[in-house]
Figure 1 (tube, rainbow, N blue to C red):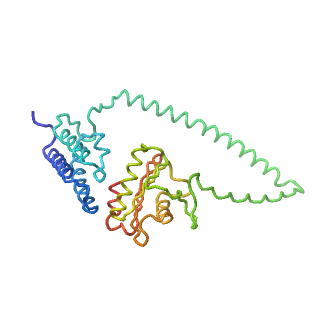
Figure 2 (tube, rainbow, N blue to C red):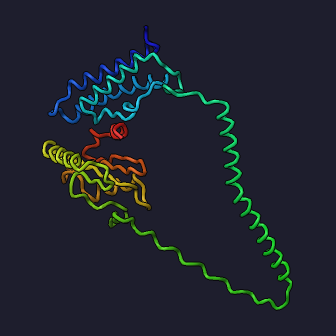
Figure 3 (cartoon, helix red, strand yellow):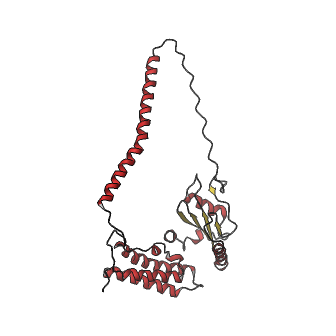
Length: 291
């Protein structure tokens, strides 16, 4: 029986799968960094077009949603290619805007949802109504006292109260420090990988640290990975990353050829801060695609 996927969509997905397999077969450990990034980006463009066409007709897959071409190994690229081929041959196309297996919402569910929404609104609005009533009563009593007292003889004016002192600046969050310029940064890590959120397996962290050490020895470029729970209050991810790369001095002296990957898991934020010496290779567009 022929596939229910439209021919153009099926061809786009199969073309993306072929491109991923071609890239996986061409992977080489001694490949130049710029060539590797360009080749992975080319495969990533094909993948984005193929998978995007499938998603438009409602065919999605969790593995493909998490797939990142720039960091993928050969086996991961082949696995993604196999899933693309399977989706392209699917005969269960739910149609635009729906996923496979997604049921239509019944009218009874909609009615129950509306009733629940109305009850929730009433319960949330009741405290506000009570507070508003108390505020109006107290306001009217205060206005009446002022009206009765404004014509009273020999009224002694009360001295004006001094304005309260301005609150002190919030202290720097625990585990962070302030630079001489007053910017908030984490302390400089001792290794290439700093996992303060505790999400990396220790063995995987040590392996990644070793690969980044070898990468610096071979290219002189220095890459650092910093993982934590939340961006500290009083700053933004952009300000923190820009101040950190200057404060830590990532990269070779005089070359400024360093980059830092920041990941804050609870805030679901990620950013790559790049030194001037790597901006020609690791551009803003490349960094955005990686994240």
